[in-house]
Image (cartoon, rainbow over all chains, first blue to last red; front, side, top):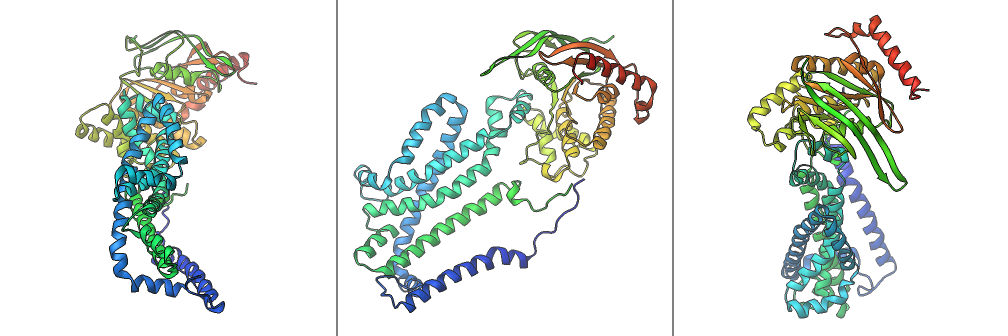
Length: 269
Length: 257
């Protein structure tokens, strides 16, 4: 009988694992970076020190307050499209073998397009506004969601399907009761990969032509050889990416508490 | 005697694989009576699980016919409960939700069947575990939950495919006793698949013996042991003799070395 419950990790241990270790690693990295810049007496345009880069974030906060929301909006738009259309595509592929054969090569083709090269075309199609950026963000994050979700929907044991079939279940019931919930952990893995792609997608979209956004700031700082602004922008982009990642991670914990990764107590037979 | 619940006539099954046709079953025929505990005994690869799937309507036989409760099986048999080799519980559902899956899919009154599910869980000793997730249960407890799932809609026929094969010997003996207790309380027709001779003899009214390559039915033996059966039954002469007779018969067929 599995009745022995392992105590939940205490706050002290949790703090060590989740906060202290990563903080120490980052601090070490930043120290090496800072020391390199100071000791080699590097010019700011060559490589700004981390203190300079971080202070730039705060000194230019009004600039970031103008540009960051635009990029965030594009990421959210592209990512939301990816999730909705990605899950729908996975469903269609799992539902029908014929559709899987038709859709699969198109998906691979879409994934191999170098998006930076088609971004100008997207501007011609959708106009000089945020729409083409959302499209690039969507295109880049769509594939991992489809692949992961479809894999999860297919990864149901034959016995499980037979068990539900034996209840005189319809094809839809088999999907809804077994394939769909089974795909959730896979979906979240794909969604976490995709959120990073959605972020770079929005930046790439802005690269090609934009008046606003963090990608625009990167282009601007590059042309002005303003390395301080460039690094500050990279810091802001990373912060946004990490923020989205944690949001998805938190939603995952909320949606699939039964998954092996989130089990609070462990049984011992 | 009561009417025939399961009628299997000349059922053959051929699987086409890349390496050619595999004859899983060759002209298998038998009948199980209403309320009977009927076992199919044989070594691995004799096609006994295939036979169970055909009776449950999950597989279509290449040849022959199967009828359950007088109607021919063409798709998943409507009034049946199946227990598989592994518990096949959904790890995103609690124990109670797993049992209730049967009622949900069949569109039954959930409130009414929830009560029944709780009653069944209590009967198999899982009271207080209804809100646990499968991973919080031992293998034996998981299989008991899956038995509740197979029984919750009160089917007249229960198909069990080596349900205790993955359990340790002690748990297995306990489960056998519990199964008999449940069966004696409900008197359903049970088709039980196993490769354990003592298990088949202990549980069944009749035991059908199968041999592989291709899977065919050799003979049907009656156990003639009084009920209710207890642990002491296993020490009775009739039990020991029946086990011995069946073992010799399997040996003759080359199923045991």
